[in-house]
Length: 109
Image 1 (cartoon, rainbow, N blue to C red):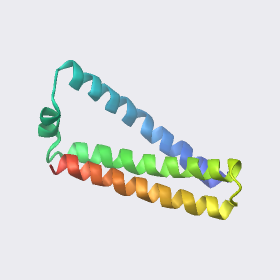
Image 2 (spheres, rainbow, N blue to C red):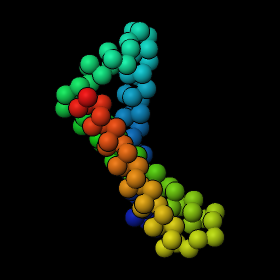
Image 3 (spheres, one colour):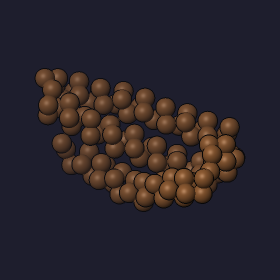
């Protein structure tokens, strides 16, 4: 792995750490409070804060996963570095699109 990708993957991991902790804490809060899916959607609908939170989460996760997948392809499969990079970019882009669609569905519901 080159230094630039190494730094980007570590940066996205550092960004995701507090986001994962908040996400898991919210899951525990919602389940302990007995909230239904409708209750949760009622609180997240039209929320700029939650939209920004999960958009940042999705972008960081897509970049992080794409780089990690590139490394797995490059090190563990017979494909070359260029093909591994292309597969990882496609995967990361699809993950980004699906994640942003989910954010939009929850916030704009």
